[in-house]
Length: 274
Length: 274
Image 1 (cartoon, helix red, strand yellow):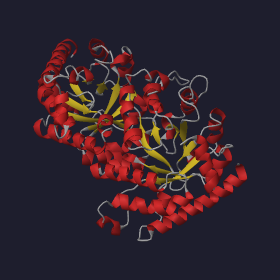
Image 2: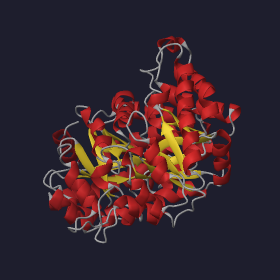
Image 3: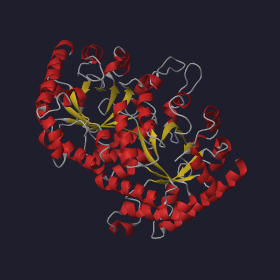
Image 4: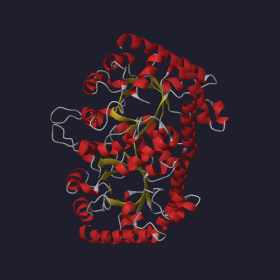
């Protein structure tokens, strides 16, 4: 999917919501545990009820891997289901991979040839040759960690060099030599508030994937105020606040309602800031 | 496995070799492709011929994941095979994971509860709460990326802060508050040469996992000269130079010979520097 196509979806749906499919087998409604593949069954219902309100899905690989083979199968089936039923959705494998060149090539192949998602999150610590193998795929995206939403983001990402440039700024600046805004996005946590202004000074045109609204406490208003650009430029993710809003048999309907609430807020933000 | 037990193995075998099981389906001998599980068949033979000369195995997850379900199964079977036949071997899942706390918990469970390896490589970019979930497992290890072997290690890892402290030094220093040398090791690339001296100033007692000897061109002598401590403190990895030394039917014998050559060099280094 191109940047233009993604923006077109955002305009059409008046939403820049990404639903995080962090499907934890210990948290899904009991009645699903009898199904042959409870994780996939859960995802399918969540997807059916939320697809009208979001433009992207983001399965986090950790939740699938922790179930071994069964989990990987559920991940692959989930991606295939979205591809088939909702071909306009942007699919992000939240995997935070990154390794030396020949190894990153393998990871790129895993996600782009085998699983056929649109984008993969990648960690920048190992530098250019750990990222570029993911960029060899036409129409596919790298979403590079820049400024994450968690407490530990303070440990290294804010480190200032002798010119006052912080590590996340260096990551943003330097990685622009590796790919354009047509193939690279950045993770910037909703909890970072006004630092979105600093981010936008360096990457005015890029899409940002924004976790941390909801369970982690970030503010959508603040994110939009400081982060939105003229093509929206935001994919705001919510996982737990949507998919675990209700843990009874009505979980999917409730998830749909939560997604719709966020979509309506987002429509307002698009009205206000775009 | 404890640090003492690992050192005991090193003394017993006169080796600190880690064999990297980066098993690439496109590179294994043709005759194995007829087998039901070619990756596992390849690994089993490699392991049988190299186990006397090494103290650790390091499957890199990228190579397994790229094969989807089949690959994961081969990974799990490989770990189980080593556990059963060679219980004294230290098994490292080279996965370079790291995510927000609740997600890193999932990754930790994947590798320590499901796959039952001894150690996982973890990327430090997201800071403390992305690492500590891996440390809750007794007798299990985190191997944190500090100064990697690839060209891209220059991009961010050498960034100096206003006091002249480089990012990899900050990672080494700060992470010591999260775990002791009994539960944490660091990745330091053999290609980094004299920087091992700087690393040892900060972490004199820790084990270092050292990739980059062999195909990547690092020098074993230099690594030992600057990096060895009184409990050896090194696990030197070789992947491609051992497992792909020969791509005919005699691949495993040749791998064994290559491993033995390295073991003999290592015995000399232990004699010289320990």
